[in-house]
Length: 116
Image 1: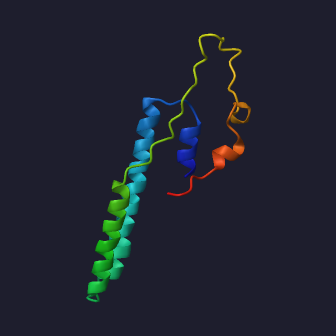
Image 2: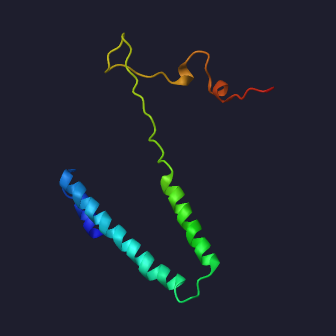
Image 3: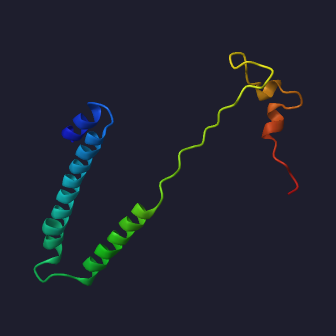
């Protein structure tokens, strides 16, 4: 963990940093896969004690994790920039709050239509 933190905190974004990051992630993934298959699963499914429940739980767990990784990541919120009107300069443009807009009150914003 300390190596990854040092690598990402030192220096700027570069192709070398991306390569180092990829190599470190590959090493950690390989370690995880090795421990899973040769230490944990061999102990659980070996020695002639394999039950159908353990195999079903293994397959269901794999399917759930595969489904979670296949889900798309949420998109970042879209932000818009308001352009100043043609009559005002960018330095003097302001937004008018709703409370000072004629005919719009806080109570009219919060009203819920009835009779639907």
